[in-house]
Image (tube, rainbow, N blue to C red):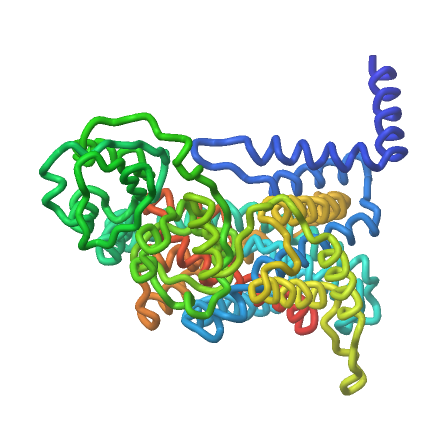
Length: 560
């Protein structure tokens, strides 16, 4: 029996080494299985799952990923991060984003300082400091940028250290500290408000009341009524809307077979046909008393359509949803509002900014009219501008190769900085000219997710080779250092955000998760707040957090 097992093990190792595609996608698939495993409400997520699966395969099979494959994953991930952040990054600096930038900067600077102190106290080997920061903050951009800085030679390294050994130190330290970085961050975000005596749900509800929270249109339906109730004839159209319609529905009035345009001061007439599009619950609040419901007259009814509109018009920047009054002014419903990939809550006081994506529902002609006013319409949301995407990555790679000698040291952006800069620029240009560089959200998510997991599989495989030895030698001290790096920046930034920036606690907790680029922590905040309000803060700091933490990786290699 032992001989049979040994033969099987030899065959399995041979299989894994002979077919590199097999273990790579096994790692990604098993990573999702591990990441989706739940203990109560907690799950590790796909990134941690792939990292753990990679460590297992690296330790038991001695596998390593092809450097070219990992470089491709790295390029897809970093460029997509820049592309996503581009529209918001530049405009936020010029507008109201300074407070969010300051908060993200406090998180990054405090984490860098603590990491440097910890590395000095531990007398850590080169690369360990970058791994500590990346793992303590669960920051994949920090990890990617630090490893690239070592491999590309953009930072000076000790003469007696091999580059791959330093890259291995980064990977192993990241893997060891990542576990608490993830679970600790989520736990802190969940329990810190309770320790401070904050009721997140109450704070979010208070902010919603102050901002006149609007109804998020869900379960959209269209119904038609023939006006036969004389009580509605006596009321002006504006009064009917304010009384029954909650500022949401789109209405079409048909009189004698023709669609007519009515102002708020106009009145309905008997036998008018009123077609209303809105949330299903609208039709249980009295508006159905207009008269008998009738089937829609499809020969005259304008068919409802949906599209995404990217906000690029300067006249829209800085205006609230309440000021725009989109349902009445344009005859369309705003179903979703997305900023840097995060869905924001509907609020009459929500201010639109460059690059916001509005998913709208309504007649095709009304969508066209709103799209022409607000920015650019995207109906064909499956098309991807692969030409710009490919040339953008190529330009980023070239940009990263440029270096300038200063004091005997070559200074440059490196591959990570070049790809990030290229992505930021193309994403920003797309916000100005939406027909340029189209990369739909679903396509961007696939490219960024696959790129990240491909890169993370390589990190796990590399860390698996010596993780047992490192854990036995200095694992406890590294874990303790990672704990401090996770906890202290959150505490410092919370104090800064609440006392200096005076942010609402629900917004602030969301902003902290954005500054640490942790989508998993954001989901915990929104669950605690029982509201999507924290997503506003997350979207405000996310772009800045990505850029600052990416810069921090090479900086620690240089200083540490």
